[in-house]
Amino acid sequence: MPRTCSNSQFLPLTEAKKIIVTSFESPDHSECIPVSDASGRVLAELVYSNRTNPPLILSGPDGIAVKSDETIGAGEDTGIELEAPRVNTGMPIPEGYDAVIPMEEITLVAEKRYRIHTQVSPFQNTIPCGDDIVKGDLVMEKGHIIIPFDIGALLTYGIPDVRIKTWRIGLIATGDEIISPDKIPLPGQIVDSNSSMIATYLKQYGITPEIYPILPDDPASIAREVSKICRECDMVLIFGGSSAGSKDYTVDALEQSGTLLFHGVAMGPGKPVTLAQVNGRPVIGMPGPSIASLTALHELVYPLLRQWDVPIPQDTCVKGTLTEEIVSFKGFDLFLMMKVYQKNGKTLITPVKRKFGQMMGVRADAVLHKKAGSDSFARGQEVEVRMLRTEKLSC
Image (tube, rainbow, N blue to C red; front, side, top):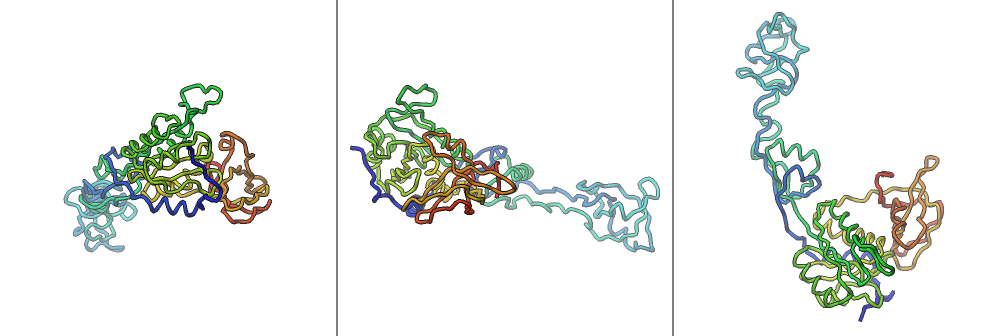
């Protein structure tokens, strides 16, 4: 029989987070990829330079290359004339020369002949060989998150490939009424949009999402498939079937295939969310509605992924003035879709009208988290929201 979850069984969100981040070891997978594809990825091992940079002595300023011992005695009142080659910033010093005098400190006497009034020491005004890095030096530590600038550095140091950490997450939708996005739904059928939506979020952090075929409402089939996917992936997200409907069998299936850690979290939306351990892997029963699924992703999946060193950036938050009252809901953490806009030089935050479907998320710019036990938010109160669309505003 399908499982139900009564209000008295809902786990506080803080406890649910603690359970999920303390119950699973970080996977240890890696692969070697071209440096040009590595932006945003996490290094799985130390990286050492294959080259010395610069490979020889370079000129610091524009000027002339000199032999330092030939400048002895030069001063403000005692000029010395000598022949010298011109050099520009970053240009190799010609063989036999060991210093540079800047252009502003010399006078041209004839072609390639200059009067100097400055005595220089060996290697003065030069960039030494290996000033940037020496072959064999450490370039980046394990766990370093590669940014575009790093790609240029790695290529400069003769490193064409790097070994990066990898994570694979399986996504599977369940339900007799669920159909794939390439089909036209008949009355009563629902397109599986959650798998593609969540997969897109995961991809941007270097995770490999694997979308599996949709399963019917059969607990034995669900249990077998979850066990199989847990042998192939580091985590499984299973969509649908975790609530209290007449065909919600996900919880029973997870108990058949592993150990149920919790079912039901005191958060809205997303309260039917479920966590199980199957073959040592986390399996998260995601709520069906898209906004609820997105909430579960941010509040429960992301904390575990961050602990696994997945480079998920910290939230971009914005403060503004609330335009409507937000009432409390006893014992629940609420996550409300909000619009954020500017008016008369002020940042205003207003709730998106609650409706069935996905247009709430399309219209929203941010999420307001109202913690369990907090008082109602009054109109005109300053609140902080987490941006969904960071192009709209920044902290």
